[in-house]
Image (cartoon, rainbow, N blue to C red; front, side, top):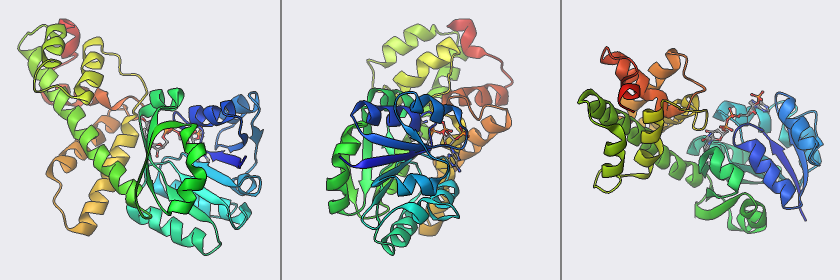
Length: 299
Ligand SMILES: NC(=O)c1ccc[n+]([C@@H]2O[C@H](COP(=O)([O-])OP(=O)(O)OC[C@H]3O[C@@H](n4cnc5c(N)ncnc54)[C@H](OP(=O)(O)O)[C@@H]3O)[C@@H](O)[C@H]2O)c1
């Protein structure tokens, strides 16, 4: 069995790492703060003092980190994975970055004889807990075949979508849809609330009408209950839209709705909602309309 390393033990990484322990993998972990490492150590993981130590203890190193810059620093920087991992190893990046970053990592690691898969995920913390994530994988077939049992221990669907960077491309497509749908659902529910409609009734009817969507079903109950939680954090959706816009600029592509959504999630961050679920973007729309807690009154 491969020795696995895991770096970045947040809302996604910690449950993914736990599922690897449950599947019987020998696991070495590293995270910026200690508490999640200690929690996994109590379930049998080894704690490392640096990303390079994770590399030297592992055949396959998995990452779940916030920003492309974090991923590059952790892999290629001083004390990074690249200093420890042996030729023949593989790095799997499950973070959401962008196609250019993924290709750069693939090239740099290849020079050392190390494989790289960009393997961003969909399914959120719930999917990470339940090991039902969807992986969108870019990279070489031989690396994916070798890592397939590891990915299967954390997810239900594994798609090989193309060469290096393709996984991040597909993930950004998903994020465009998630971010804009969430904003659309917020606008629709604000409209319903301002009309004085029974929002529970609206939810029930729309679920059986053409306006229904996975995202509507996810966020409309959050609007009604005014409980947003910390699942799909606003700062990450905003980061993903920033990556979409940066990538689109390179492609000379206008992204009207993504730009608008980027601005609105940015406004949510300014209002202190960065670590709250992105459904809380409805608060930005309410404030723009001069309203307060509209959905609560009709919930
Ligand atoms: N949340 C979702 O719904 C979701 C869904 C799909 C994909 N993703 C993607 O998955 C990635 C992780 O998301 P998340 O929700 O798990 O984020 P998160 O909860 O903010 O966790 C990020 C983790 O990375 C650690 N970290 C940050 N910088 C580090 C460094 N230099 N070295 C080691 N560890 C470091 C943090 O440590 P601290 O404990 O010190 O903060 C934290 O544990 C992101 O790229 C995100 O876009 C998220």
